[in-house]
Length: 152
Ligand code: FES
Image (cartoon, rainbow, N blue to C red; front, side):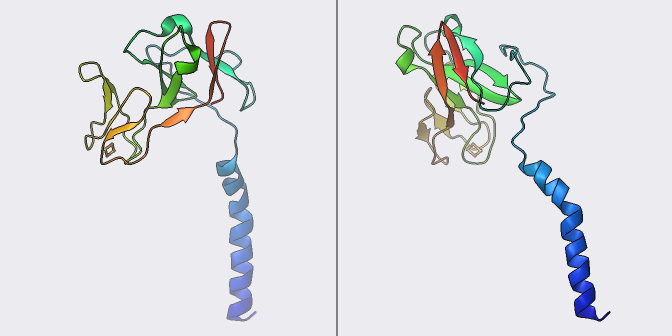
């Protein structure tokens, strides 16, 4: 076996041995060992397939000017809006779009303010101040029977 043949065999072997790991990394199955944080709701049907709508809050959880925060499958969310106007309700992932820090709500300034580099966002996730340039990611939500549902 010459050098070229050896490298071909070694490359194929490496590819074959890493394929299961690569497939697992690309899997869309969502699992979480995260313990519920304060305000987090249990997720009924934790084995529900990804994409199924799951309740993450009730309309009664929404308070004027204070996003309702929690986690779903370990991912943070913050829900804002007027419970009397379901179309105004938004759910964002308060993970900074600049460099990934979790962005807490600042009750005094009524903004999400990033502790890392100072970016700020309004309660719907829109950038108010850089260095972040993109709005916070939002979850697709649906309001039904007094519950706020999302596909996480
Ligand atoms: Fe938020 Fe840099 S990570 S401003």
